[in-house]
Amino acid sequence: MPIEKTRPAAGIVHLGLGNFHRAHQAVYTAHAMTAEPGNWGIVGVASNSPRVVDALREQDLRYTVVELSPDGARFSVPAVHTDAYVAAREPERVVTDLAAATTRVVTLTVTEHGYHYSPRTGRLDVEDPTIVADLETLRRGAGAPRSGLGRIVAAVRRRGAEHATPLTVLSCDNLSGNGDHTGRLVREFAAELPDAEELLGFLEQRVTFPNSMVDRIVPATTDAERDLVAAGTGWADRIPVPAEPFSMWVLEDRFAAGRPAWDRAGAVLSDDVHAYEELKLRLLNGTHSLLAYLGALTGCPTIPDAAARSEIREAAHRVLREEYLPSVRVPDGVDVDRYERELFERWDNSALGHRCHQVGSDGSVKLRQRIPVPALEALDRGAVPHLLALTVAGYLTCLAPLGGFDPGPVAARMGDPVAERLREAARSCTGGSDLAALALTDFHLLGDDLAGREQFTRRVGELVDLLHTAGPAAATAEALAAPAPVLGETR
Image (tube, rainbow, N blue to C red; front, side, top):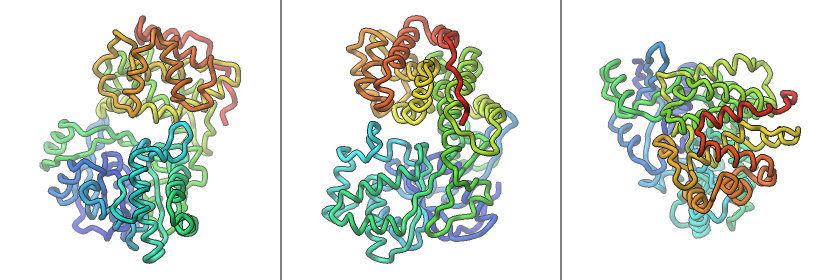
């Protein structure tokens, strides 16, 4: 395996040292510095878990990316991290590193619910206990904040006081308009502090928040990857990262203090990130959710297992083409037919074995990014998006089944920030219509606009009942047999 002997000086601090970062941004950065050397080493900061950090330190900050396909496995070792530590162990150090004049870019993969915003309003959740505590910490000027937003604002305060060096904060999470969203939340946090005027002025003049779209399927690590690396390289790597061969990164080129040559590593620089984001969040991620929930309820452990079932595969093709695609503005130069074929090739990658429970977790945050706009557009055309409704019904059945129903072991492994609240509500429900009304109308699970669309809520409830009484195959067949939405012009 190619292993570089030296590392560059750090110029990037990354919050969220999980598998995705190590198989995506770290790989692009390593390739970028091969093409154009620079001081763009990455200081990796894990939030709470020491597992990856401890292993990295024992392994001289090296790990293996294992690209898996039916053709076999390929190994690479991106030697790009200059240090790694756990924020919970060294909270003061996080702010120090973010505030350092040598830090020019902060990247984040903290998952959708790591941004501490209200799903209902999209604004900073000032009642979130972590945000409440961080605001109090920064008001007192003593101690270190615990949230990513709090740490960024604390660092901005220190940068303004000490050196005023510009900074870029780059979200790499699956959020609509992730740069705009992150910038708004940071400013809303800063606005709650006594020195808001100074903080907001610095943010306006010296900090940028580019939008980005990231795409690579990166499952959780298992012993199978550890065994592959040991057999293929002779190295007992404790923390290899499995990944598919495909990888894509689209970036707005708005960097306040420079960036690695990510474009020379294959990233796309575009002023139209939003169009790529729509394509990915709906066609890929939205369809992925349908595969995960129907697969879980059918007992399929992996996405390839789910995609191999004819009724689930047809539902995936149809939801993509008939219900998601009309809501998407396809970027110039993208061939939708080819994009669809590539998606199914990726989902068919049995060597990767992406787990349905992993894809289906955190659905309350993910579906809110994927379902409302295409559902509302279909409803406004006078049509019911049956397969979008089936996706939501599958989510509710996996996470909050009605009394006496067992959704199976795959669904049982799905996690979600509102799971307990939904399960508690489900105990009082007598049928699917009750559960759908509680989730969509009372809880506003998919936002305010969709909460008032009784036709969609009723359809979700009918499909919840079918999933419970007749099973996923019958519910899928019924949704497929219903009249397809009248297709609008693809934007």
